[in-house]
Length: 261
Image (cartoon, rainbow, N blue to C red; front, side, top):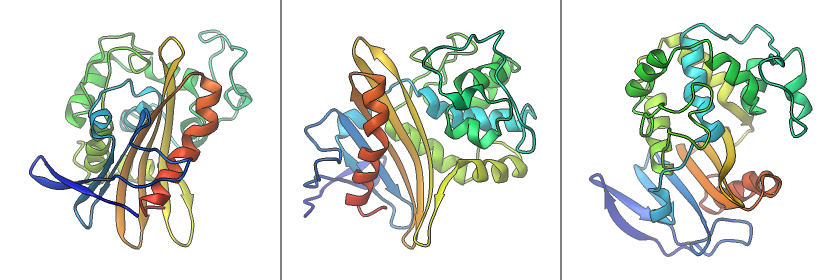
């Protein structure tokens, strides 16, 4: 049973969710946050508001704006296949096999977080090109002063869970200054799951921010009979392996208990 607390955020009435969550969901006492904005009812549900406002590196959730930029600049498409330039990015032991395939599709690169492939693609862009897009997107702190192929990896680019949702709403409202084709194409890439009851669009992201501290993201939207619900979740874990094992399960459990999934 939820006992919601209401507060105003940017002139809107928000709900801080204080549910009694199952063991696997994000709880108020934990180092995690879940933010949900439901478009039709114009309501927010937030677990751990202070953390929801804290900026982190986006890690692979940056593949959302990055893919939009690459599509708009015609650096990638959904009909071609790609492979990592292993001369530029030497394979590491921890790389999943999916990154070493020679016929990677854009959607698979996106959902499998093929970092070296995206790094290679980003190298075909210039910082002024990227900066122009991120300024138009109002994406996080818009700081790309870090390395061209790594400014989103525990570097200069930072954003909060609330920032993630603000960006996703602008994406759906098509106010990012992109072509109709880019918006339509990205929607097919972003889609993760489609059932009779809902469509789930989601992207993971994980990386180290300190010794024995990894931040893990899960952001996207759910479309169901109640409308569109944008969500942004992040949490800490001591290792990459542990993060990957629990991140999505914990986010899904929280969405279920907030009556979104």
